[in-house]
Image (tube, rainbow over the protein chains, first blue to last red):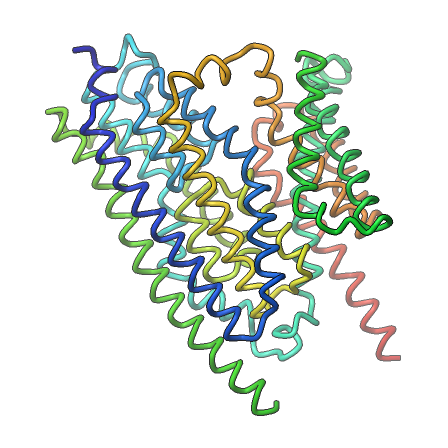
Length: 248
Length: 232
């Protein structure tokens, strides 16, 4: 039996699937508690349903992207472990990098030919250790940090303080960093100011933004409010379709 | 504060307290499972992890991710609230999914930062998003053999390689139109930075910090000016 066959064995599916199942149950518990709390606080259930529907449609396409991460890692690490890693704590951009770096530390390259069972268990441990800090920080500091963020200012608790503009600004900063990297990648990706870098991310982002503008116009001017729940997913789909059409 | 508001405030405080208790418990449980799994698998395969190699690996790559985790925790928790942050740090994929997803949900229902409504909506959003990913991945793993040719199809590769640009393009329209002048400055600064130092494109997730700090700084100046004008 090859190492890859062992890494795709039923025992690993059982361990990894069991953990994924527990995490799913945790999500359901948080979902139900938040729903009940919202009702107890007198929140509009239509709004809460809308948040759930939009989040579900929003997450579909990125989830397919994450599934590709499982596929990419399955060639050297088998299917169950990447499945677990990308369902729990993992991040698409993180896993491949850390898995490669961990393989290097155990003296192999991340390939099915080079993989050994000990290298695998060491890589798996390192992948877990490297990414666990966010969870440790939430466990230790979240209570105090959230309290500090809410503060004693009554204005903050009604959403009237700087909290809301700060959050929007942070998000604008985040989006700007990504768009700036696509623009910079095109202009200087193959040498400074050569304008010969990859332009597909720019095209995709532009098409998705245009599509979003169209959806927003329909929702606001034509009063198709229901479209709001699907506008991000629809815009992303059109943006991704443009990448298929140009074939890059 | 009237009786109704006081009751709601007490209910909310009780909910938050219980959320922290539950959040800490499930985070610890996940941590134990996640660190235990490599040893359990090692036992099953008959070879335990090489702790020395793992420690060397941690010193070489782990420290960078530790710093990144601290920054992520400080930056993202205000956007996610209590319940949302526990769940998001358990289920991962923050930048490419959970944060934009929660922001989109709160935007749709017009929930303001720091309010009980925001806390509830954020938790509903992150829990739903996590469940969708879990279901999609589980279905994908179960159907891996028939799905593999579709997912690996050369025609569809450009689409799957550009999920994040599509997401940020759509979100850019949604957020930039709120304050075009505020958005123009970090966008211009970041574009120039990536043009002059192209090697930074591999560290985009770190560049969120200066870009976000710049946007928050500008927003603060605008907020302070508006408050002063309102007081006069």
